[in-house]
Image (cartoon, rainbow, N blue to C red; front, top):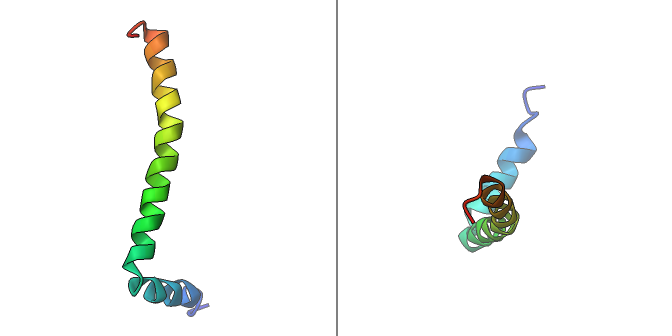
Length: 51
């Protein structure tokens, strides 16, 4: 029970040494969210009569 988080800690330690990988993940996430949110914001603006 006490070592439940051990695999997560090990993975975190592994990723600490690969900052470029972390930035790529963040960039990919940002781009994915932007695609989704652009459509959502456009739909909301249309419903509100802003566009």
